[in-house]
Length: 94
Image 1 (cartoon, helix red, strand yellow):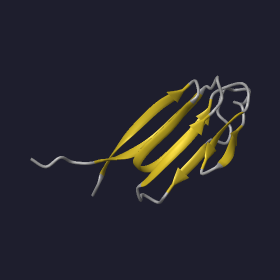
Image 2 (spheres, rainbow, N blue to C red):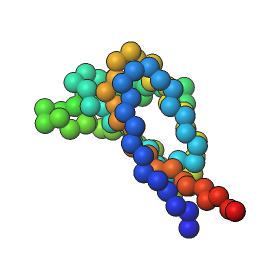
Image 3 (tube, rainbow, N blue to C red):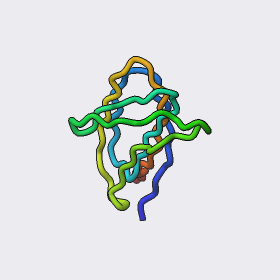
Image 4 (spheres, rainbow, N blue to C red):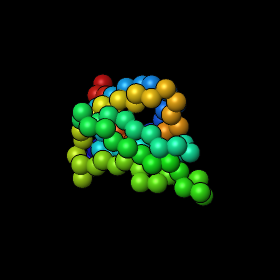
């Protein structure tokens, strides 16, 4: 059975996020204004947080435990996003 690592990254400016061997990813907007990013050539919109400070409708992708590669293009100057993802840990053999 493959092992995975859970990783959290914060995105606060323009950036291209690329990762390989991901099994699940969630992008949450913690800003008081809506934002967007590009995934597979399509603009994905994330609404602002609700009045309680909880992200509304985070963007989620999973391939039922199967690994995939991803590229997300965050093209706005100011962001307050959090990306949580699991990545497969490859074991090094001696």
